[in-house]
Length: 156
Image (cartoon, one colour):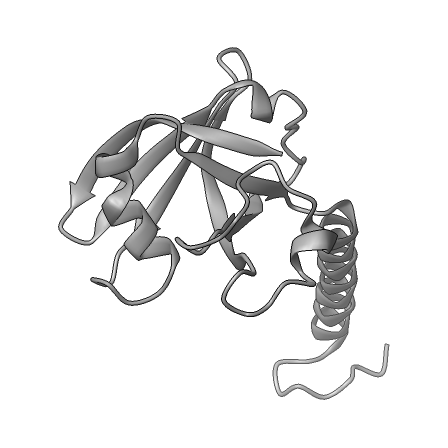
């Protein structure tokens, strides 16, 4: 899955917003969580391939050819227009993602960005953690209700 750069905005000297669109996002479906993320893959400038690509296949390439994965929070997904908005923090020429975002103005046309949405396994594990924490909180509240003002268990 991939998106094509359609809009670029500078939010601050160190933050750039990029909106992705195109037919490569046709299969994108947001997850049910409020904290959604995507796995994004940045292709080295000298790479012999471009999105879409077979992730398992390109992982076998040498280090100078392999895509660099980074996780990003989904800022917004518009299901009507099929556009995905992501904010990038830039750190000058350091790193892959921020440097890519800073250069995006110069190669906006036909620039593709590989995207893999957050896996369901992750979402389910997060839901499980929240469910377990909620149970622990309920147990603690019950314990505190059963205690006197000094923290000792009541004899009722």
